[in-house]
Length: 139
Picture 1 (tube, rainbow, N blue to C red):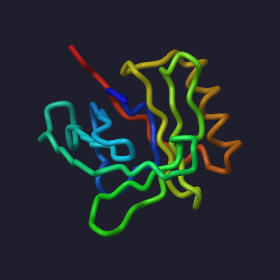
Picture 2: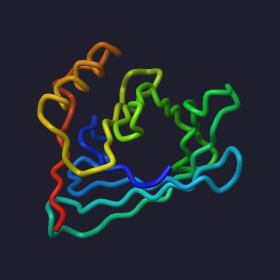
Picture 3: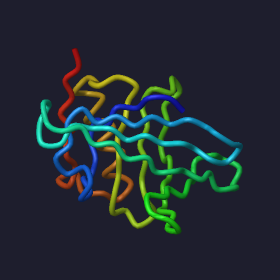
Picture 4: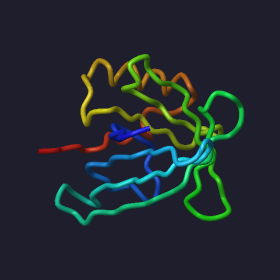
């Protein structure tokens, strides 16, 4: 749970022009997660956009498979496929292999680490060319 900076992703129509993208997760029940996705649209000084989808942890025992609900009643597939031991890097994917997110606890990660995580994403079946590095600049 907590704050996760979006380092890179396959952009959707919502976040195609996102800057300073950050997701905040908060467990509100045993299987429900309150999510706040905030970013600036089109530039660092662009208008702020905020979305509040709700996550539903599926009862597979791992807490890694969620249904993410932006619009009722649809719950999109959301799978935590990689989480480092320090709980500071995460890759979230979908079974369809159409969308993926690389997130970190801080807004920037070292280049070598980024490349290694992109290699993991490619090994999952994604095309690295579809990834968009999310511009992050925080004072």
